[in-house]
Image 1: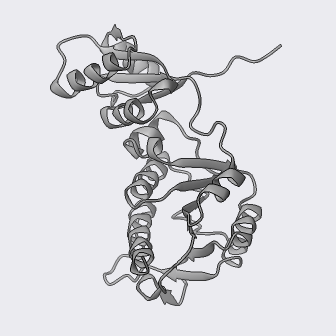
Image 2 (image 1 turned 180 degrees about the horizontal axis):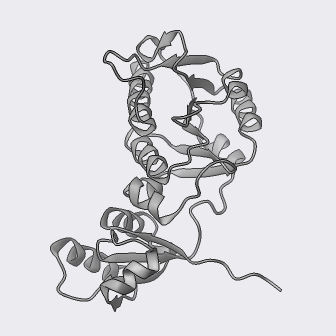
Length: 251
């Protein structure tokens, strides 16, 4: 007897709009708050009609109950497949000769995870890898915080980050670890002329010691004020843009 799959929901204007533009065939059901519609909802409805998808107009309370949040902005999509379904890492490495990858080690807060993904998308990352255990799931809240970022890149979830990092190294991908104790500043990183994977850890623990040992370089963000550290999503954005700048130097 096969177990029934839990429904997969995403919500919010930016997230649903990104799903509609980038992968409308994965949309199973659409729920929108009953009229009156604001201009943003009207624009999304026009795109929905172009894709010949059906809309269910429902009460606001129905939406809140469905996604367990009042911050749905009047729209929820139910998807056929999870964002993690069907990704082939070997095919990715064959078809992406110079990938820009982010590895997220044990990020447990869904808002932080979503914000990291949003920053990664904006910085031009092609693949995000996250750890299965000791890490939050890709929930509707993560989708909301990512603000459409998940719809524009590939995502892989693995049990063993170390094994995957070793695979990356065999494919000539430079591994850069982030650590507050690193001697090198991110501004001293050398230009990169091939693929790169950046490991970012949780705010409490940082990147695990065993993963840092696999890195080709380790770097830190210099702190000039009195705070001890940055929020992980803020730090991720700073690091990724600096690395993107280094990649572009050799193009």
